[in-house]
Amino acid sequence: MSTADLIFSGSETEKLMEFTIDESVVRKKLDKLRSDKAAGADDLSPRILIEIKDVICHPLAIIMQSSLDSGIVPEDWKLANVTPIFKKGSKNGAENYQPIQSDLQTLWDDHDHERRIS
Image (tube, rainbow, N blue to C red; front, side, top):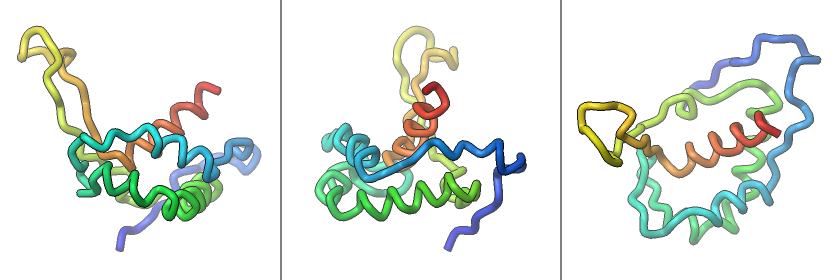
């Protein structure tokens, strides 16, 4: 079982309370998964996530919203198995690689990024 640490250290008024994660947000992200891609570090095939999305949307939304509300993020969510995939140019340049991570980590990161720029 993973542990969780408090990551928010500001005052209550500084929390991002106006952002919510609901089933529609999770479903939208799961709908964008491609079933022909390989499993990520979590060993969950995108095909499986797509097939069970109707079952997992609600629990995932609750878990993610609880984490956002409490400011506590499980240790496993802080870790990512990022694989560099070569794009073009010299193989010696880090800028010529694209980072790839697991689908569930991408789901959280995409929503986090969208709420920051909204």
